[in-house]
Length: 239
Image (cartoon, rainbow, N blue to C red):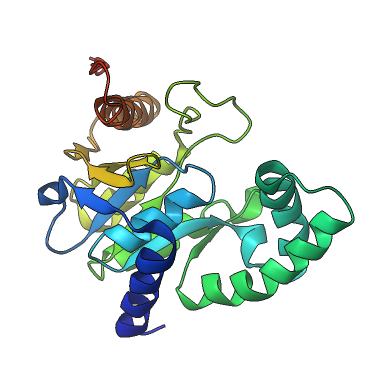
């Protein structure tokens, strides 16, 4: 998909579905490479971020969502039954209809498939580094779907594996990679951008993955709490 087509799609999503605003966008770089990390907020998070951020984004997507044969069943379980609350066989019919549009759309906007099998685990990292070297913007939603949502923030804890992207980027370039936190607040119709967290390639890899993911998670939670309209809850960053 050409950049102008992507921008047209983003404008359409903004006018028809999201209709929100972005704040803190001074924390975004004018050009890549950059990795944006956001809370998912169901199906709304990706739409909100892609509508609001004034750059072309390349999102990480579960590989099943980009597979014609696997997408209907994934959509049925993860979206139609979970969020629309339809049951079989209606949920499968709706999922099949959605997948006929979503699979070619995700493919055409050059989403990066994330596989669950061990043999293909490195694919998103390799593709992402290639795009970062072209000064692109990668978008990641790292919430762990196996863990419960926090009742206040409606957000699950982040996985830490995505931080390995900083390790692969340093191996190829010798430069540190920045991760930019974004908070999607559905009720306020706001996407807020926080200050970036820089990956330290010289720290022990496992502890650095934990540090970066916790820092990003805490910043997103802090921004969501700040948009609550009640008491501003400051979430301390890890040392």
